[in-house]
Each structure stands twice: as C-alpha cells, then as structure tokens.
Length: 356
Image (cartoon, rainbow, N blue to C red):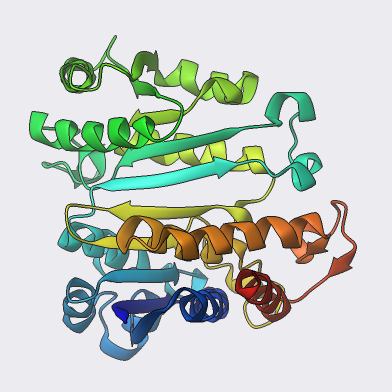
C-alpha cells in the first residue's frame, strides 16, 4: 500500500476546525483509492508562541522537512498583534516557507456556476473564469536586504536573481502546458530594473516552451484587466509583492475567499493552505467554510504525492455539494437550499468523495 506522511499545522482561530474537515475528506478518499495517510501535528503561529514563546519552533521545521507534504490551516489574530515583529504569527509562516524552500505559490481561481451571483462582478464577466496565479514566494521586497525602520524614514530593498526568476518561470510554463498554453508575465519593467531582469529572463525561459504563448503586462494594467476581462488569463506569473496583491484581487472573482485553495511548492517540499486568514471572530462557532482547506488538500494529493484520482474525487464532491445547494453561513445568500455547519459540510464532501 502507498503510504504518505503528512505534517499537520492547524494554527490559530478557525484553523483547527477547517483542517479537521480536510483530514476527514482525505481519510475518505484514501480508503477508496488504496493508499494510507499518517498525520503528525505541529504548532506554528500564535498557538506556538503561547507554548514555546516562538511562532516557529524548530521541531515544526524538522517535522515539516521530514514529511511528504504539509497541510496548514491559518494563523494570527488580535491576541498577538502587539508582539514584536520576530514573535508575530506571520513571521513564523514566512520563516517556514524560507526553510522549506517553497518558492512557488500556486493560487487557482475557479468561478463555480452555482455561485456566480456571489461575485460583485456581472455574471457575463466571470462565467467560465479558470485561472492560476503563480507567485514567487521567498524573494523580492519581502525578503530583500538592507531594510530598516528609522526615526524619520524607512526603506526596503527589492532583489531578484536570474536563477530565482528562472525557476519560478519554469513552473509557470510547465503548468501552462497542462492547461490552455498561455502565460501572462506581470511586472513593472517600465520603471523597475528588477522587472527588466524579470522580463528578459522570462523571455529566455519561454524559448524552451514554444507551444506556450507568452505575453507581458504591467502590474497596474493587470489589476485593471482582472476585473475588466478575467477570462483572458490562464496562468499569471509574477513576483512576490505583485503576486500577493493580484492573487487576493483575483480571489474575489469567485465571490468568497472561503472557497479558494493554495499551494506553496519547491523542488522538494509542499505546503498546502487556504488563502484566507484565521478569522478568530468566528472561531469555535461551527460556521467557517472548510471548502478552501479541503480544496487545498486536493491540491496536495495532486501536486505533491501524485494521487490524481483521489484529488478528482474531492474536486467533484465540492462541485456536487455546491450544485445541490449546501452552503455555509458565508454563502447563505446565494441559491442556498440548506445552511450547514463546518462539520456538516466536511461530512457531505467526504461522503460524496467516497461514492463511485
């Protein structure tokens, strides 16, 4: 039997609730497809700070490195907002990404027909949207040195090497080969030297993928085009800060941030998480939407361990629950036939994913 070790980091707020539902679904499909998952939990974020005084204990780093994949919930909350920067929950996540070398953040955006009215955009604009943002994750201005906050000024440094750009570009082109054969590289090459290097390097990589169409777009235009005509995009390739902003913008095409998964992958490791935050204001109430986390688990099976059939089961089950009108509270106003709890939504998806 195929066996995989999964490091589980539930995190803060609604993290434990939504991860539990993802594990429920994973267990269901693993039985149907004949493989075994073993889980080991680790702390990160505010929960880790409360126990260890550190948002990323070394045992979490080592556990993640020794696992076949990492399933992660969400971190943060007002409780820890006043901590020094190096003790804040978000710092733990940034450090883990760096330690794992997960340099590519993959954020798919799919608009479900059943929820087309959940978006603030017109149905004719978003119907059929299916795009993927490929964001460089461990370089750029978030990690550049020097950086400083001084009494009357502050500064950060945006740095990319050619090698960093090459490796993220290759992932984007390889994914595009399996999709609709188009990459839109987003930069600001008209004013930034870093973006000039980005554009030149992406063009060099593109030569190895002649069947994939490459277009360049300035980031300000890309932000506008995402709401004007999002169906023009297939794979969007961009750097850390631009990708951070554009992927959040793109997420709202679907109408709910609670629907969208993400993967952070590198040459060896993969970290899978929903794109939303920890929502401590609704934690423990049983109303959080677990679909984004369950969809992240599907991505984990597909991209990290190669269990495509199990991933297909999960994806079909998510579409079915939405088609049948099951909604968590965040989507209650959109063609809802029955409002269900976090636990009930997870159980429904697990049940449907188990059916032949």
